[in-house]
Length: 70
Image 1 (tube, rainbow, N blue to C red):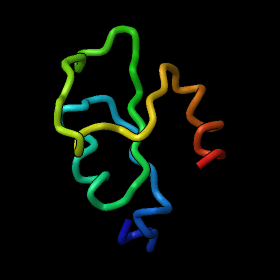
Image 2 (image 1 turned 180 degrees about the vertical axis):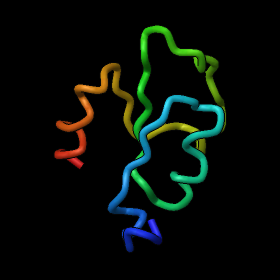
Image 3 (image 1 turned 90 degrees about the horizontal axis):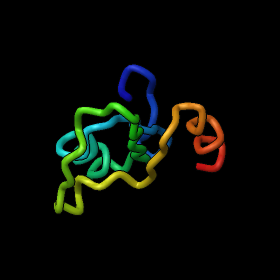
Image 4 (image 1 turned 45 degrees about the vertical axis):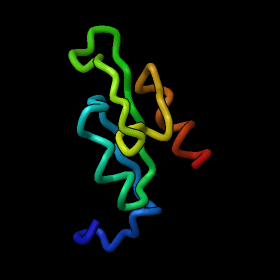
């Protein structure tokens, strides 16, 4: 974000591991999107509300329309 001079609110974090990938981006104010793939290796739930993504998609092709909405 620093290199691009972008505010956290203008960025999105797309990741798959609910155990660790969304905690810092959520705290910074980024938009967070979990990509759930059919053969994923990270499938265990996380009870920490700070770890929850704001959006969940099942297919990468759904990312562009979601980003347009955000």
